[in-house]
Image 1: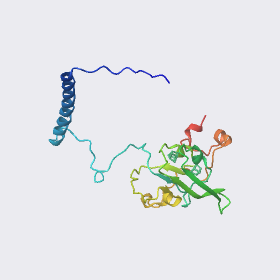
Image 2: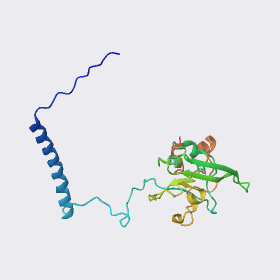
Image 3: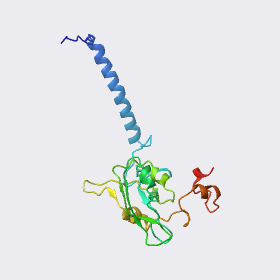
Length: 200
Ligand code: SF4
Ligand code: SF4
């Protein structure tokens, strides 16, 4: 096997120039750091550091935080176990088990609805995909926890955790079902704001 010769980088003989460059760069960086430190400690400049949790963070209305499952007006879960959210989820972290609903008006409901939150990327595709406003990403952002924590959000947690104060009722009217081409084109019962992307 032949020997491959590689060219070595040229020796930098000018040690003084190297050291000078090093100190100039470090000093200018440290000057910047100390001047910001000084301005903030003497309150000449506002610090962007948040004293969390005493000082809560504020996010825009469009912030996508912890998921929740909405309810019907009678308190039942809104989800019809159609699997559209689970299909749209790029992280494949939604697991649904559908069951037959005891009443005739509703076809299916989720017996099990779980989100593996450590895999979730908070893209919001699930709420976009849901045709009945059954899943939404809310404003809650505190999701810290330890190793022993359960990182799978169950159906009960998604619909009834204490932060939701008894659950969130969906904005959709009760009898609005999944859209079809027919109801989309001719139905008068759909609210204009319900599915703007589906109106032609
Ligand atoms: S926010 Fe995105 S990644 Fe998370 S569950 Fe919904 S679709 Fe999946
Ligand atoms: S898309 Fe909506 S209705 Fe369908 S399974 Fe998901 S949350 Fe339930």
